[in-house]
Image (cartoon, rainbow, N blue to C red):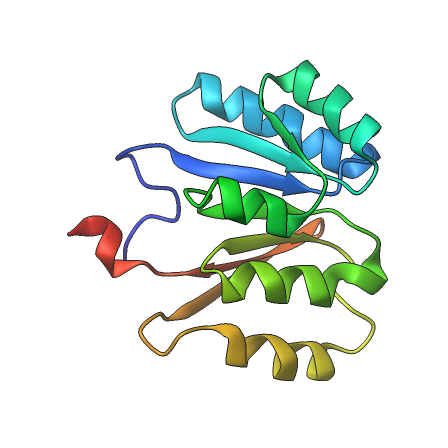
Length: 149
């Protein structure tokens, strides 16, 4: 089984939603960046004043929307989704349809059956879905065989 976090090149990550939880994700990513595990590319929040402040704090770029981030920084490989629960599904879908792996703050969604029926079709057939759950969040990672080639 391949390692969950590769020891190869750092994973380019972003945080979507930088309220209290999202800011904490950015802080942890900054610590992992210092260990050479990830590279915090940017933070996304419709409150651009908040996004700018968190971006300055953690020395990354600020974006007002997922679309803006994906258009200008297509190298994002994974993102933490730390938006209000009612937005989890839409945000995760947009990211996964763009090939970005997601780590989602809990609760995942009010009804997991509806959520999984909406998300699984977003995963391209050439990728295999792996999920890991903890008491804090759920991680949906799609194996990228092309990374190892």
